Length: 123
Image (cartoon, rainbow, N blue to C red; front, side, top):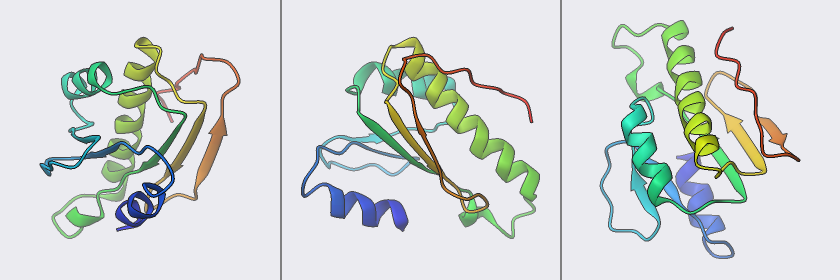
């Protein structure tokens, strides 16, 4: 919902690319990518243009009530971001600004002045 609202609002003034899991679309600059699958992320990174900013709104809220636990939500949400940033880094396509928000965290904004990011994969 939030992602759809931002996409609709921002596309008026900016070139926007969108990623969604499993939902096919004919929209321009739209990519169907399962961010839990490294092979899907690699394909996306190869095809997609380099962007100035990444607004990463991910969540598994739609799976609540199906036996998933909060720790699993957090692990998957973090891993999808790690997958995306790692592969974009390999392709020299890391954005300078990253905004990360999930249903269980506060919004985090990072600005990277150099092109290298150390992704800590443990918490």
